[in-house]
Amino acid sequence: MPVPLSSLLALRIPLVGQSVHAGFPSPADDFIEEMIDLNQVLIQNPSATFLWRVVGDCMIDVKIFPGDVVVVDRSLTPKHRNIVLAIIDGEPTLKRLNRRGGVMVLHNENAKLPVFTVAEGTEVSIWGVVTATIRDLKK
Image 1 (tube, rainbow, N blue to C red):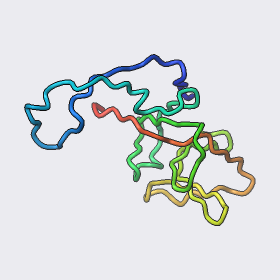
Image 2 (cartoon, rainbow, N blue to C red):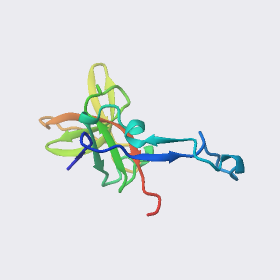
Image 3 (cartoon, rainbow, N blue to C red):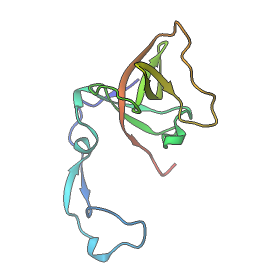
Image 4 (cartoon, helix red, strand yellow):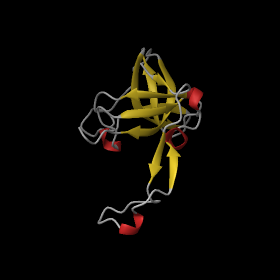
């Protein structure tokens, strides 16, 4: 089940510098510049934003892996090429949304999987748009 974010408290974490290089850190960057609220960074509309834990590997080619948490905003209008959370016959799944000549097509983002097709008579709805992923790198 999704976790609603509308009732979360502010989560303020120190922001150290404006960016980070992937090499050796500069000693001058060893200070806190400001506090940022992760809710403000990750969430545009708290009452319409939910977290979902990812299972399965249908989106690994866009770096969404099993165990990741996706931030899904229900207030956004799904657009061509968005990653969306779709409900297909009652089951939530992540897919790439493509629009072809007014027709909505959903795709897996894993070259090792067969092409995803929606069979005729299948009930499909777009539940929300994925806006961010959160990954625990300790695993």
